[in-house]
Length: 289
Image 1 (cartoon, rainbow, N blue to C red):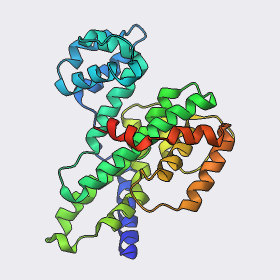
Image 2 (image 1 turned 180 degrees about the vertical axis):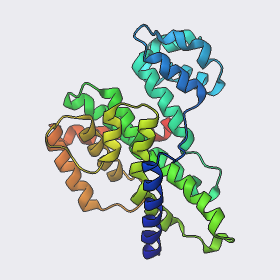
Image 3 (image 1 turned 180 degrees about the horizontal axis):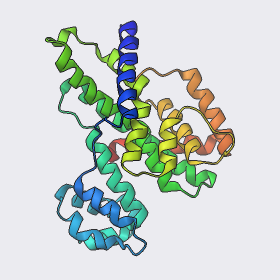
């Protein structure tokens, strides 16, 4: 089955690369409300509460905004009950991150029972990397903590897009599910082809360059800029794998090597890094809803 996955992965990669080059690949867009708010955020005179008329049009997004404003990070502060108050408390950076997170989460949801568990696992891994990347940025003195969060969150964003394309391909080439590739091979194909799709999606959504860069080069550290968003994501990715928050085969030796290199480059010690990982699975599952 590994040979089948490899051949299919090569075919899918060739097709997708051609579509990207021709600018003919149809990629999912964020919800209209998110797109409009993100456009407003780019205005220097923008105040978070200005987004109220747009956000209140989508009850799901409005509920997420209120929940985020009253999250555990705001413990000890009086609960907000109105949307303008919630938006103001979040601030511009946190609001942008939340809206992109909502958009990304929708890509990881699938009604297909065969891949639902995988996409759920992919989303939990993405949340884990995002949380760890932001915390590592804080520890290592990287100022762009929210960018680190987004880069971690979206580093595998191409996977659900490729998953959808594989399902569409299955409908066209087989008449019985039993003749299609198994779940292990399906994951292998995702691993082979998702990065260029993720980069294309980041560019379509107008995300910061460090986010696209982290997607493109997630597995290789940059020694020219040791304390960087990309290196935070790379270390966070390895730590999430060590904690078992990953879909696919894990090379434990490679993971430990990646962690050791990342600790050195970012100037963080083992004790601090291990502290970030304590209770990570519980934190992630509370956030991945």
